[in-house]
Image 1 (cartoon, rainbow, N blue to C red):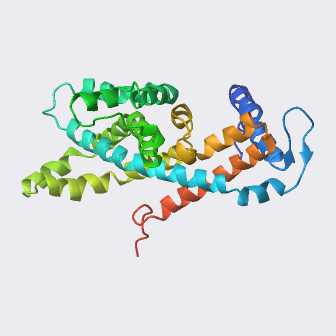
Image 2: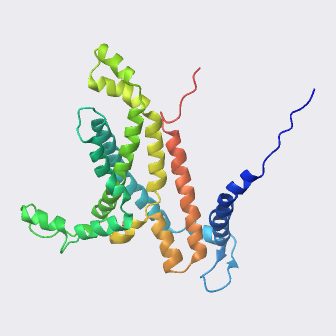
Image 3: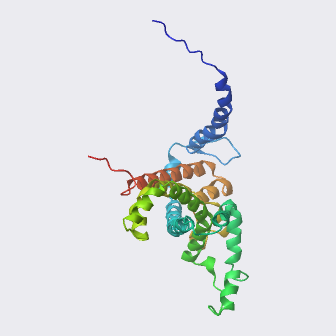
Length: 295
């Protein structure tokens, strides 16, 4: 009995080599180096000095770090609820065949997602400026307020504004993801439900939402990972009163690139990584996210 000899062509490795080389040099390399820096004291102008777990002990006792975690979670909650609600509602409406110009609405609603967060942050900061902002001017014109409101000088209003930037930027992307999930549902199920006399509400509850479950899980997880890394918009809007909009990544930025404490900045980065990982695991533990094993 003869064994077939398979000649392996090495040329395939040449095609994938650029990716792995760039990943190790520009991806894995900086990650490992920043992990090393988290155990050092380095200002960027001298040689890193090894300090062991001193930075991590400092992190666990840093009230500002835990405050930044709370700020990030609050802003994310304020943004994710209206974001997913609006996205799912628009997806359900635009999925209907009687809507004319659906593709135009797809482009319009997705447009904010291609605008950089810095641009949106500057735009919202100008809109809510207490002296020259268009929001105050509009409210004064209709008689809703008698004097300008200092939006960005209020703890909760400033957080809501930052959350509004996130919601405005990302709802269009989530809408397209939901639309893709809706289009993957077989139309025969809706026809069978219509023959059985099911209402639109019953169809949505019994067919659409259960079959949209994988898409909803994907959107929720990506929203958790992306939302907890928010940086650009609050940086442009400002930290708010009493650091009310200081996020984890803003705290990292200030430690490393403003105070030039690169060792502690790297420690904050890994602390933020742990927080995001824990939040992602908690998302998987939500009832209904993981499929229950059938008996």
